[in-house]
Length: 79
Image (cartoon, rainbow, N blue to C red; front, side, top):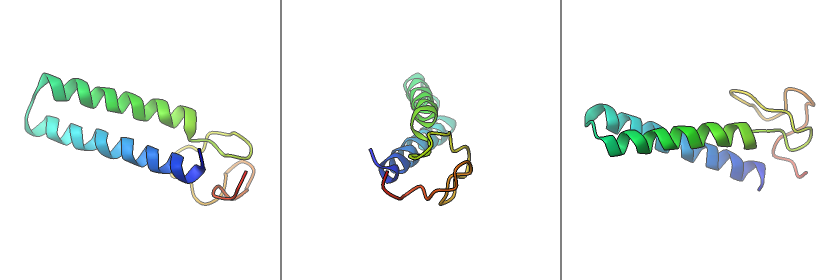
């Protein structure tokens, strides 16, 4: 999976989780509560497993730019 695909997956999971949480605030339902909790857990798990530099493998943390904070290589360049 390329870095661009990983970034897209992370953004999709975070967007779905945020949308479900907003829905949960407007209309309480046990189904949306558990569904939003599952998407939050999936987003956290994907972050821990996938949000890494493709070159050195270091976790990128919050707000990764164009380069890895550890090795300095561009994140979107081929491995």
